[in-house]
Every structure is written in structure tokens, then in C-alpha cells.
Length: 486
Image 1 (cartoon, rainbow, N blue to C red):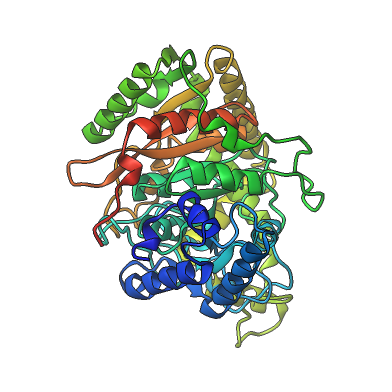
Image 2: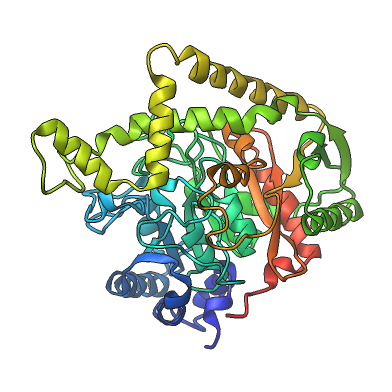
């Protein structure tokens, strides 16, 4: 069957159950697509044809025996910061270039239990620190819509793989926009679930109070299936919340008439790109046609969100990355004079410039005499941001806003200007600061043909509302159905 790589997981599941194709055939199509495009796009760090085909054969056996699950046999890419037992997990960093974990992350175990097919590990910004997937020690991933441009970060490899058909679905992680930005730039759908709804056990930490695993796919139907797989309590993760999650697929066909979306003036006042403004204006008209009401609201603390984030996240990174010292695992310098010199040389050789920058920022902010001036104030701002969102949700079902200030920029354009790079996250960071669920879905294209995403934000553990709203939007639009001509 031709063009299997263009189909969604929902479509492939139907074909598998009807016996019109096999998981092996689907997996071979994905591997062929990877082989063809990988030299140009570089979505992957490691590709595992042997593992993928073995899992595909097992999936076909399950389907034949009638023991298949909804996602059995579907190919998936796993971001390179999620532990995959006995396979390399590098986090895009030289310091973990040869690290193979002795266990699976909980989300990876769920994938295996479901009978999905793991194609390989997707490229990412080093330790998820970046908005462009340019800081990976393995080199940048390129945007399938224009290989001269970035795919977004830090889950750029995951988004690019889905966008160009190398993987049907993928997992990413989102600390300040790292699922939603790549989804927007690559024209796919990606959700950051509520903090605590998806297990972080086996996710290599960047900023532990902000990190969250989530799925990327071509449309909301696949996102709903993946949320059903991911959203569950895990006793191995102390931040996992023991609540009962709904079947997210039951919200796909629900009408949205009578729902209300809030429009934060703080976000739209910062917009200056005409293509993004037009796409969001067109998206708003689609919702209004469906009977959704819009109300203007204010989230005054958001103006301080990006400054507070770039205190909190580097502080937590400084603590989390202290474990990479050349003693227990990972890279160790070959030439050194004593233990302290070994620490210094190992970290100097193993970490890239952006990781070093954030470690130094965090270490400074946590140092004696500066904790109260920086980290404590940032924590207080975080509380204010959360309160602003809670107040907003008293008058609306969700918040409607941009994902990024502009479409994807060119590779190398901002890599030497960290302030401009950090400002790429201005619309996504507040969601992580408040621990809320946020989704990006395709909402249009720029005059240059680059995808533009729309962001919807809901209250804690209300991912179902996001599924409901995006499903209604995607029934009325075709942005998510378009593929890059590569």
C-alpha cells in the first residue's frame, strides 16, 4: 500500500484491524522514509531497524490473536531524553554520548505494553535547553517545510519526524514550550499535559518542576489516543497525581457551541507579525462560526513570566546537571590532575555552550546572598501567574493565543543571540510556570508557506476541553492535512 507514511495512527489502526496492511509493512514504509530524508532533515539521533521490525512482527501477532490495543503496530519516535533500556539515551549531549540506561522510562514501558513500534530516538536541543534544536551535539534538525529553517525546540526532531512522515507519532517533552513550539513550526499538533498527569520517571531532568512529557501527531484524534496511553498515575514518580482521567477520544465529536475562549491582551499586544495575526484572526472566525464566544481578559503577571522562568529553570538545571561529573556514568575526561580537575575537564568537554550558560546562571542565582534576590522572587512571580490563570478560568473554558511570535526562523539566525532566542518562548513559558495543559495545532501558513500554530490553554487536568476544541476546529479546517513537499 502506497503512502502509508502519510496516514494518521487512527487511519492505520483501521487498516490493521481490517487486515489491509500489516505493522511490518507500515514500519518498513517509515524506515524507508527515514532512510530517504534523514540526510536532509536529521530528525533522529539513533535509528533502530532491528528493534522496530521485531516489535512490528510482535504487533502483527497480537492483531492476529485479537489482543491488540488501539495503538498496537503504530510507529513512534521517542525523544532522546527518555530512557530506552539498553539503547543509547544521549539528551543531545556529548557528556551522555555513550550512555545506555538499564531501565525503561514509564512512558516507554507504556509504549511497549501497548505494542507500538519504536523507530528510534529523536534529536533535541542539548538537555532540552533551546528553542531551535540547534544546540544538539549531533547537529541541528531541519524543518521539513524549509530545510534552511529551524524546526523549533527542544523537541524539534520529534516534530520534524511526524511532519515529514518519518514517524506516525512521537513523544516530546515541554519545559517552556518544547512541544508546542516545534508543533507550530512544523505544522503538526502537540500538547503539553498538566504537570503531574504524565509520569516523568525515566525522563532525564532539565527543570524538574517544569518538565512534562507529551505527544505530537498529525491530528487531534491521534493526540487523544496517546493521552489515553500517557495520562495515568505512576507510583515511581512522586509528582504523579493519582486522579482518574477520562477517555479523551469521547470528546472528539462533542460540539463546542456555547463554550467561551479568553483572549489575553498581554499576549496580543506583543504580536507584530502580520502572518501570525492573520492566522489567529482566521482561527477566531472559525470558532465564532461554531458558536464559541470570545472574551477579552488580562493576565498582568505574564509580563514577568519569561524573566522568572529564566531564573527558575537554570536554577533547577544547575542542581540536576551536577550529577554529570565523570564519576558514575557518561563522559569522563581522559587527561586530568586530581579529582577536582577531572570534574572540571569532564564538564568543560561534555557540555555545550548553552548548557554551560544556564548552569552558570542557575548557580549564580542560588549562591549565598542571591537566593532571595533572584530565585525567591521568581517563585513569587510564578505564584502570581498561577493566580492570574485561575482567575481567568472563572470566566472562560480556555485561553486562545499565539504559540510563537513569528514562523520558523533560519538556522543560525538567533543562535548567537540568547536573548532573542529566549523571547521565542514568550507565549509558551507561562503555561509551564502554572503547570497548565496547553496545545498547539496548525492554524494557517505564512506568505512564504511556513506553518503557523494556534495555542489553546485550559485549566488544570482539563485536557479534554482542549481535545474538544481542537477537534471541532480541525473538522472545519484543512491546515493539519497538508504535508511538506519534501
